[in-house]
Image (cartoon, rainbow, N blue to C red; front, side):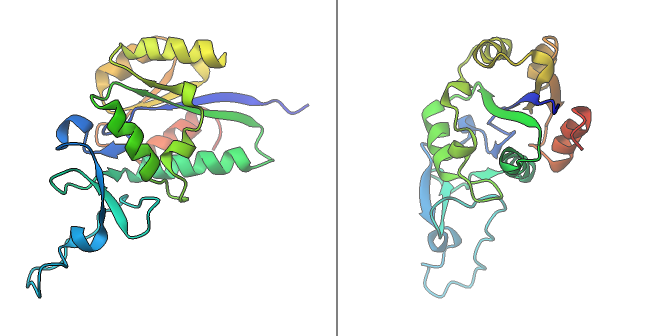
Length: 205
């Protein structure tokens, strides 16, 4: 009989999935046309148009998300890749696993985070809000993250040992790993290497 692997993959938001962190941006995020971002409106300006940053794609063609100062908000390459991989694995009928995803965040501006999740997309073009479609598994609060995980454990019935967690803050990784969760420290934002390390540790590679 095929055995199903139950697994919960949990992501922090600020500086794990995207940058900058919400406390670093000026005012709520907004959508800006690429033309406006690159400054093409300036008449025959000699300055080179600003390069479009990696990970800035949104659900709106020709628009990116920025703060009020024009700082772009972008998804880290590794997070974008991991979420696309999870979406693919969930669709794959040959994959014997029940993969679920969750968020554990202490972001200062939850409403901005929810807005960005509707706009920003993973590699496969799926908006983050659809990648994290189980809304009851989105834990955004200022509590210690071990509380988030106790709540996720109650809601899913998935044991801590079958959870993976990506976070850029070492103290979160330290406290959550004491529950038995397999944690991956992402000090520079999530990378493909972080995701591969997780797949390896769970024996999925």
